[in-house]
Length: 161
Image (cartoon, rainbow, N blue to C red; front, side, top):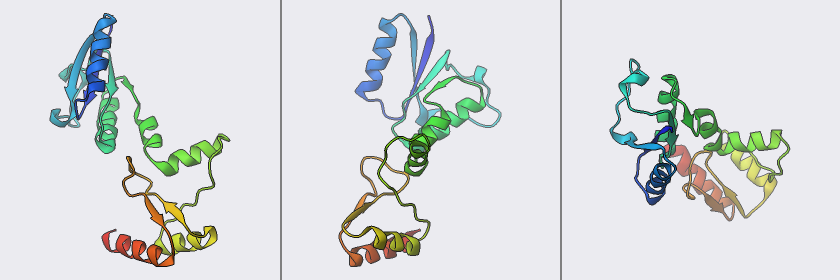
């Protein structure tokens, strides 16, 4: 049977269940904490116990993305590949891909400055929701009820950007 390496950065019940099920199916399973694993540009696959395939399960989007890139650099087979994680983790990339392949999606506006965002907001009207292209669990999602709210929001973003 195969040896499966489950990479995590927060060991949750889901990862424990995946390990248990892999063992029940007769596979070997190795748990690997991405936070303590050290990889560099001279690292080679033989330096690690990645098994036959890695299942990337990091909660942190960026940690998982970069860890996956490191694994793929060493030619380690990864489930949840870099390209897929990069596309799915970025709302703009994912929206464009869905639209390209005719998957029904709401009309979405992309803005690359506060000025163009305010112009798009005026086209749409209030209230509306704005979202950062990266982020999960609702982080950075803002309801904009009126122009004053929009102005305040973009002023804060311009200061912190």
